[in-house]
Length: 366
Length: 257
Ligand code: HEM
Ligand code: FES
Image (cartoon, rainbow over all chains, first blue to last red; front, side, top):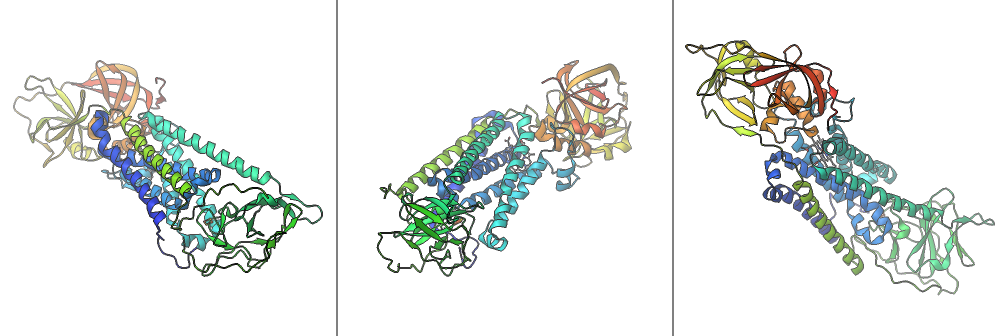
């Protein structure tokens, strides 16, 4: 949500996030390459370039696992949201670590030969017909290419250039990268069996990610299954009980075509917005009203409750819906109004009459 | 209206204030993250297996070694018995992932002198030809004896792994296994002599220099089987102190595990 694209918009939280990441990465590599050889003669006997590529390869795989765990973790418990806030930096760092791994491989296993490195990478093992001995490096190449493309297009410039749905679809490629990395490690190092940890970490990573994604998926399905029944008289959608909405928060309903809608309660008035953040499709309804704006929990993009527009100078807009109260229930018109249309929030009976709310005019960009 | 539960706090990345619940959780996650990486690092690195005892040995110390050069299946220097040691057959390889066939072929069957550095692992010796005039023809010394003819040891079926002889001997440690397959193939196509590392010894030898059934270099089809436990069949012949395994293609995936 910025009007001008800077390479990186820093703030204190991002600095802390990146500092911790970097500490972890540096600690991992230093311990692997400096401490382990002191502790074990077996490690000492392995050539340093081979240790280096193992260190960076295993770290890339662990970081990739972590990147993929953040999504479901944040869906399952909002306290994990800070992890999500700067996840793109974690992704870029993963790509950099994987790239380093690949460079060490190229400059050792595929170097010192009359055949050029890249030619050798693609031609020196052609056992495509068998599982054991399959050129597992190619899966690594595939994973790395995806990671590099995603890292290169991670910036908000690309997000708005490609539009969020396209960008989002493209960044789902991270799962293809993970699958390829699993095959890379599985067909290569794990089958080889020279390091029992490789197979162990591979299975642990797969198991953890599967469980987290299944749990998060079940939660999403439960949201979609809940309530959201269509009111026979009006064709509007019943998204829930009025008293289920806390002040400053929203409840989320599902419209007939599957789109989710968030109904916020603020100063005893109701407003319905699309639940899909126009930044990265974050769940706005799991956010909160901050300074009078509906604020997305993922990166803090903000939208005016009356018209779904981000406050100037920002230009993001999300769909708005009509909402009404019927008895103790909240109903939403499933047909969105044209983008940017202003709808007065619905006053909850017995609530004080609307006084024009003070509109904050300034906000830092994330 | 329902009583409101306490607000668990809401994190906005660009806000200066972070709610205490969130800060606490973030701290916990960070500690977990760092401890996790530290223990993963040590678990990974310390469980590495010993790659074996191979390595570089500077036996010649700048000197040269003379003998009769044979070029099939790969360049071999037949060094006559001297200094109380029996006759030796020494595999020759080049710098990097290259053999020395180009320099050796014109000298086939003639006397030659080589300099360089050894890689050794157990009874596997390979001389990496190097230095100025690393491999050059010389006049046969006075009273020179011709090397012994190869001794046929019959047909064998062996289980083991095709490795490139240079890395297995210690030029890259470990020089075995799947991780090394592409690298070994690159070495072998470059002319580095391949060796078969057996699971059970043949006349006391655990590694054999590999050849095609015709006595020439390893057939390309066998590159699909490097780095894996396989079963191979073929004639074995002995030249001085090395065994040569003339394998028949195709190979069969190993049964032993
Ligand atoms: C051009 C791309 C790549 C190439 C050529 C490549 C090649 C290799 C090779 C040759 C090994 C075996 C190294 C050894 O054990 O000595 C290896 C291991 C490994 N690679 Fe890659 N790789 C690539 C990309 C990746 C990526 C993107 C990841 C993860 C995200 C990755 C993760 C790993 C892991 C975890 C291991 C096992 C390390 C161990 O067992 O200690 N690699 N790779
Ligand atoms: S998805 Fe990034 S702020 Fe909503």
